[in-house]
Image 1 (cartoon, helix red, strand yellow):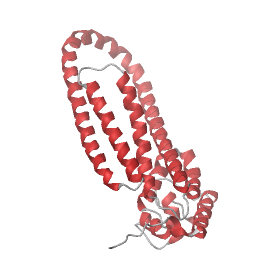
Image 2 (cartoon, one colour):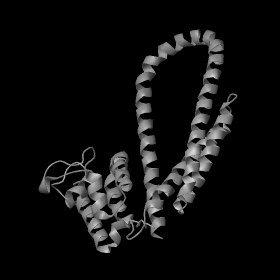
Image 3 (cartoon, one colour):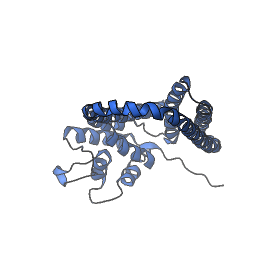
Length: 259
């Protein structure tokens, strides 16, 4: 019988974590961190992203597989390094440096980090469930309410599957796959119902839209610039909030792994 050894963070070496944290603090203090690039410059002039700075410290001559460089050297799962990369780029600029240092500190030593990705999935599903339940409270046309209920049910199945997988029952992940298929079907049903409602509404709205269009056209020019600016600002705020929520969920999951 073949036994598969579980990789432990930092190869179980507290000194390696201390080195990792010290490097992160140096990157911050030396103003080495920059988004949008894995790395530019050489030696003391080097600047790079969260992953790029670590990869440069580990092997400045190796190029092109930065995630693997850090994962292998530090005994960390590559999915975590990829998430670190995406999170650094996605967070607001003011949050990036502190995230870089705090993540290095939060990762525990000598721990199997695989359950962390399932706890993260649970946190994401919980956020989606909040939005779906809010949507369920609104009034909808026929078929849409049922579709939302189907999505909620599928998400709840997926949540239970990830909880089971985090506890070591990986077979339960098949339930998550079935849930995803169910959610996709529900989403298609919602779209179909919405399109049907839109077709019915279009005929009755056509006459009133004609007169409304003339009034709207007069104010459109004045409001267009403001609307565009507001939309861009709202999108940026939503994007930042989503990554902040993901960061907080990651830190909570790492704390749970360390407990």
